Image: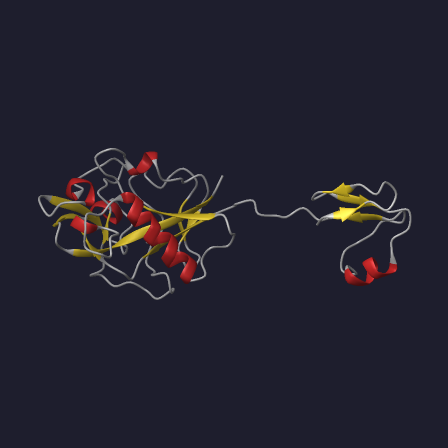
Length: 219
């Protein structure tokens, strides 16, 4: 809210309170849903956007490991995979706040997943089941499987996610940072709760698998 103080005539930029000697009638009508104190102070409620939990899901969309996240079929990357998670989550209405940032749970040659993925809050799947308590996502096992796509339909036993990551959150095979058909890439099962949720097998980099996506709020 921007306003001009009735007493000082000064322009106030996004004030927390606006002081009036007497609240104008038209102002009261326009903003009747907002409270005024007895002395004419308009009280602006502070927004509540503090993050208290995280969400995790499996994408219905799949990519070959050698071009992970790249719809054009060129070399893939973690950055491209992150962009896919963001687009898919936004389209599915999963972003609670405008500053929700969605990231793919991946490692590559330069970084371990555990060093780039936040698990600062309890993490839930899209059925509301607790998947991992705060700080335990890369402890070697989870409490409940990821189990759901972004549209809240259940996965099946054949679905897999590229991770390039061991159960400890450290890097494993990653298709040369998701850019080459040579070698293998580690994949996880969204139906499992032991270390296989991240590292059930390694697959040829031409195979088509999904992504795990999770969220945090932007700085």
